[in-house]
Image 1 (cartoon, rainbow, N blue to C red):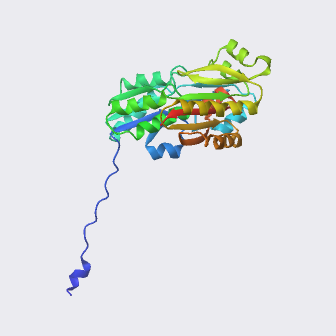
Image 2 (cartoon, rainbow, N blue to C red):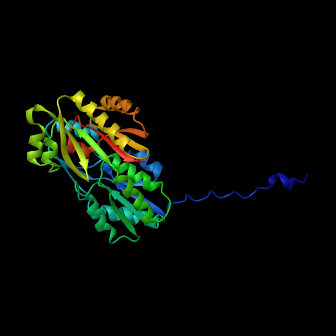
Length: 297
């Protein structure tokens, strides 16, 4: 065998460049997507801002649930605000530089926050088309909508329509240890807060068309959890197809896991997730909050 045979080297095959989605998806930190989930689906998460005393934080970046609970337990006043339009503009520019041709930006209910408005202002100056969606939702109602958008093929209009469909199919109910956090944050009126706690009854609240209302009152925490399970069962039975369910909590992991176990008996449940509330939603609901979310599959 000629000696040169052993010295032959075949040219290396170049590795294909990663294929970027034609339509990139952006959401905000109230979506309750952890970094691994967001990375898995290629979703860009823009954090909302949290002010605690004289300090400012980014939701999920500088301040998490445990730190929030500590602040609230020490009586620190916590307020929240939407990101500046410039933060969204920076995200849209980065995605354009990475090769995206369109963006779908799906966000927390506009009735609860100015986040979707800030995204809309940034979209007007973006270097690519940006479809801004008001999900009328929050938590994993929003997170499921962002994820649905990320797995939808087609142009920006089709992807945005899917995000809107899932987000606006959200039904959510929750119980809190105190309505004071919601009242101070302006998410519920003073009279509604007073009515919610009349006679020492525990309020059950609902997210309806993007707004929070007190819908009924029960006597104890166990009764409140029973009612949440019943509401999910009724809602799932009312819908035509499969549903996805989320259980949220702030500082009540064991209670949330127990509640999720009970929901596995719900007919039509395609997925059940448990997620702790981030600093923005947690700051408005307070420690001990427990919520259930139902969306169309």
